[in-house]
Each structure stands twice: as structure tokens, then as C-alpha cells.
Amino acid sequence: MNDVADRSFDREVARTRSRPLANGALQLRHALITMGLLVAAAAGLLCVLPMPAVILSPMALALAALYPLSKRVVAIPQAVLGLAFGWGVVMAWATVRQAVELPAWLLYGATICWAVGYDTIYALQDREDDRRIGLRSSAVLFGDSAWVAVATAFGMMLGLLAWAGWITGLGAAFYGALAGIAGFLTRQVLTIRREIPADQAFALFRQHVWIGWGILAAFWVGLF
Image 1 (cartoon, rainbow, N blue to C red):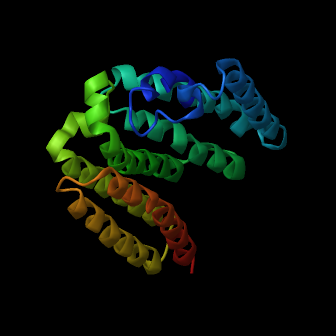
Image 2 (tube, rainbow, N blue to C red):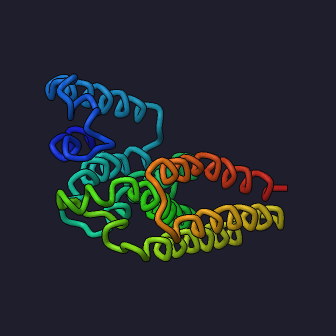
């Protein structure tokens, strides 16, 4: 969905002009067929999920479709990305618990904040191109203060995770792990206080795979 919506913009950005839709290697109808097959496969998974998750599923599709369009009108489309990515948290909670309780919404909020943080770092790669072609992003909006926005987003994420851990009764090890993650995120924020090249911004973005594993591990160790 994202590549279909952005194909004309991708041709104008150095990093994305080699994408198959942007350079003509993939035809639009083939992309739409592939998208339809993927949506059908995702819908098929609903057959093994309980009714609360099924009820929540249309919102997942709507948010996924909304994100590509948000870059035209929303000053911080990274927040819409977080809404779309994080909806899986709500559906997973509903699947296991048959209800969506407060901790699930706290985790959802944390994923939104996380997406704003890491995708702002990602957007630093394209800031000048985005300005030139008129695309909106948090990296463009905050300019030289992007590091402040990223620090705020990460701080809110950690706060919401800590709140969720407290409500669910996780142990001290959970908070110790969060402190370690906070230290790692602080290093990233300090790095982007200065202008950095695109490849370094992408490397920082990729580190969030390990941050995700760290958050998962924090929940695990907090159970003991």
C-alpha cells in the first residue's frame, strides 16, 4: 500500500528511486494483485482468532491504508505509522484475554511513541528531498530540534511501558532492563544532536530491531 501510494514521490527521492514501482520494474496492476493476495491471506488468519480480534481487524486495514496518505496532510505521519503498527498489540491482547484492558492501551501508546522516535530517525535520511517535493515528516517539522522530539517520544514510550509493568505486577528486573534500554536510546539521541549522514541514520534505525528484542526480554524477566 505504501509503495503504491508513494510511487510518484519515490522517483524524486535519491534513496527510493530504485524501488520496483518507482523505476518501472513492477507494474501497478501486479502490485495491486500482490496487495490483494496479502490482504486475503491476512483475512484468512481471522478464521482461527476469537471474535474480539475479528471485530478489531477492520481498523488494522484502515490504519494501514491511511498511513501512506497521511504524509500529504499530517505534520507527523510517524504517529499514524505508530497507530497502524501498534494495532497488532491491541488485537493480540484481545485474542489472549478476550477483552482490551488498560495495560493493552498503555502498550499501544508506547508503540505509537516508539514509532515516532525511530521513524523520525529514519526520516533524517530523506529530509532534504522531502522538503523539496513537499512531503511531510517529523524530521522536516522539527528540523534541527528533531533530537528533542525523538528524546520526548522515547521518554514517553519508556514511561508507558513502566506504567504497564506496574499495573501488571512485573518485578524489579523489568525496570532494570528498561533502564538499560533507556541508556541505549540516550546514546542514539545524543548522536542525532548533530547532522549525521544518511547511512548512519539508517544504521541507528536498524538498531531498533535489537531494542524491540530488549523490550520483549524485559517483559520476560519481569515475570520472575
